[in-house]
Each structure stands twice: as C-alpha cells, then as structure tokens.
Image (cartoon, rainbow, N blue to C red; front, side, top):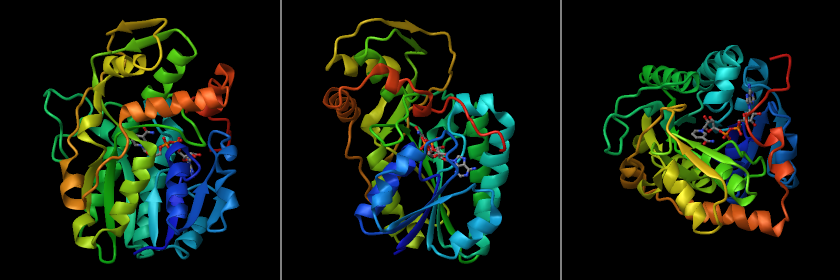
Amino acid sequence: MSQNILVVGGAGYIGTVVSDHFLKKGFNVICVDNFLYENSFSIYNLKKNKKFKFILGDLRNKDLINELLDKCDAVIILAGLVGDPITKKYPQISTKINFDGTKKLIENCKNKKIEKVIFVSTCSNYGLSDTNLPLNEEAELKPLSLYAKHKVEIEKYIISQKSSKNFSPTILRFSTAFGLSSRMRYDLTINQFTKSIYFKEKLDVYDSKTWRPYCHVKDFGIALETVLSAEKKLTDFEVFNVGGDQNNFTKKQIVELINKFIPINEVTFTDKTQDPRNYKVNFSKINKLLNFKINFTVEDGIKEIIEYFKKNNEKLETCNDLKFGNYIINKKNL
Ligand SMILES: NC(=O)c1ccc[n+]([C@@H]2O[C@H](COP(=O)([O-])OP(=O)(O)OC[C@H]3O[C@@H](n4cnc5c(N)ncnc54)[C@H](O)[C@@H]3O)[C@@H](O)[C@H]2O)c1
C-alpha cells in the first residue's frame, strides 16, 4: 500500500479535504498547487501537520514534478481549471493546463513507473442523457463543455496506455461535490443554494428539473483511499463513478431539501436550458467491486453548512468573496 502520496491540486476545494483525510490516516502527503485563485489560506491548518509538505508550483513544471515523483509512490491528480464557466472564460489556459499539461504529467508518472495514479474526472462527461435510467461507466460520453471535453480526452489517453508495464492508473468520475472545505466553493449547486437561501439572497434556479449526482467532499477522501488500498487487479485501468445512488437529485429537489431547514425567501425557477446537463448516475460498480458506500447524504451537507454559518456568525460578504469560487484567475503569467 502506498504511503507517500502526491496530491496535485491539493490546495483546492476537494484537495484540502482529501489531504486532511490521508494525513489523519497516517500517510505522508506532498501537495503541489499553484494557488490559481490566491487560495494559499486553504492550507493553513494542513501545514501544522508534520506529515504534510507543500510545494508551490505548476503541474507543467516537468523538473519539479519529476523531483516530486521520485519521493512518492502514488499520485492523485485533481489540479486544473475546474467547472464549465471558468473553462469557458479562459479556454486557452484551460487547454494548456487541463489537456496539454495533464497529459504530460500522466506521461511522466508512467515514465517514472509510479504504479498507482488516480485521475479525477467528472460525471459531467455524461452530458445530456436521453434516458431516465441512471448511467453506468459503459454509458456513452457526451461532454458538452470544454471542461468535460478535456476530461474525456485525458480519459481516452490513459486507456490508450493499457499495454504499459508498471503503470496502473484508475479513472474516477466524481459527482458534483458539496460540503465544507477550507477552500470553500460557493459556486457549486448545493453550497450556493444553501448560502443564498440562508442569507435571503435572490436565487434564480435554472433548468430546475435537470438531474445530477452529488457527493460530499469527505466521501471523496474515503473513495480515494479505497482505490489506493484495493488490489491492483480491481483498479488497473478501471473507470469508476464516485457517489451514491441516493444522492441523485434535480435542482428543484435540492431547494426543497434546503427548505426543510430554512424558509425560502426569493427563489425563481426558470427552464431556459442555460446549462443543459441532465443525467442520473449509477454507482453500483464502485460499491460491488470495491465495497465503497457514501457516508453523507445531501441533507447532511446542507445541515453542516447551515450549522457552520450559525456557529461562526458568517457574513454574506465573506461567502461572496471571489476567492470562494472558481470565478476569476488573477495570475497573469500562465
Ligand atoms: N468540485 C466538483 O464538484 C467536482 C466534481 C467532479 C470532479 N471534480 C474534479 O475534482 C478536482 C478538484 O476540483 P475542486 O472542486 O477541488 O477544484 P478547485 O478549483 O477548488 O481546485 C483545483 C486546484 O488546482 C490548482 N491548480 C490549478 N491549475 C494548476 C496547475 N497548473 N498546477 C498546479 N495546481 C493547479 C488550483 O490552485 C486549485 O487549488 C478537479 O479535477 C475536478 O475536475 C470536481
């Protein structure tokens, strides 16, 4: 079992929670991140742990990456421009990082004979589904955004390397995340809706009848550990959806769940197909093969955020700060 894990993009929304998970389980974590959103604040607590090492750097810096690969026996790739809006806003940077850079990083892992490499992909790859049935890993991929198109291209590249020796990658298609993180993202549906309804902001819910799977950030840490500790034959060049069947919801249902805890003020529902993604996802493969089950429901996540707001007397201005979402990139030299 791997003991030294390189988390690429470990200072992000999911990366900080995942790093914390591995540290608590006694692993050594090396995190490399370029703080794309000035998010250096996110690793403040992680740095207190002696088993955590942070390296400020870009995944495209080959020398740096090779040096780090010599020190680890497993790699988790989370870094990049994440989400449809940010990749639409910065298409060139997205191509340079999410496709060119990520492909080279995976090539380097292969050349360095890092056996366990996990590429974190997305259920967004399923795009617009024409069936109401939950989609499994065999379903046709219909990526609609540049973000998902690059994920699909990288997945294809990985699978094309199947004959390589000493290289055993796994592709994980994550559901849309929710829950608390030290690099909070209020641009994600459940976090955003909970924040807006709690602070009585006006909330426009577009495409309210569209389905999407959701998963708590902490469950991603457990899923990643499950994959790293599994027998190689079960994860070798395999693709797994990560989430739980019971966490497929429409946006309207999410609003209804939030309404169980806080009254709804100003919410409008419009179906303008601004974001046409619509898919339910089936998670039986990861459950049956690796015995992974989610621990947190969407309701748990909503409650957790509301409790955090109350306990910390949180202000709307703080949540709306641009650093708590993937809105703008301040770095000029990418
Ligand atoms: N958040 C979700 O709902 C969700 C859903 C499915 C899949 N995923 C996948 O999970 C991963 C993490 O997502 P997230 O929500 O934590 O995003 P995030 O934007 O919070 O984190 C990404 C991190 O990568 C870093 N980064 C970006 N470009 C880099 C580069 N060139 N070199 C080094 N570091 C770089 C950023 O600084 C940031 O800390 C992504 O691969 C994403 O596609 C996320």
